[in-house]
Image (tube, rainbow, N blue to C red):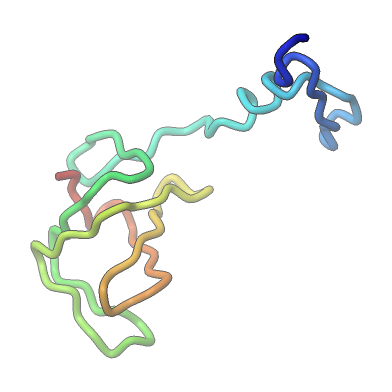
Length: 101
């Protein structure tokens, strides 16, 4: 019996063809690199530090310089990261205001 990954095919709506699942996963990888303010490469799960005080819209709160944000997630935009803070859920930060730890 062969591995399931060898037999799986996924319909690619962009091309209108059935393609091997491994091929589609490789094509779905982001084509851009996400970098912090210092030029360090960021990845899902990294921890970052704020490099300046940021006023959070809608939360009436300011995140202070030096605040550590853990477990970031990359988005479709190479200039933004999705993250969570203890008091703010659904926080999106610009990469120009963070530095990798």
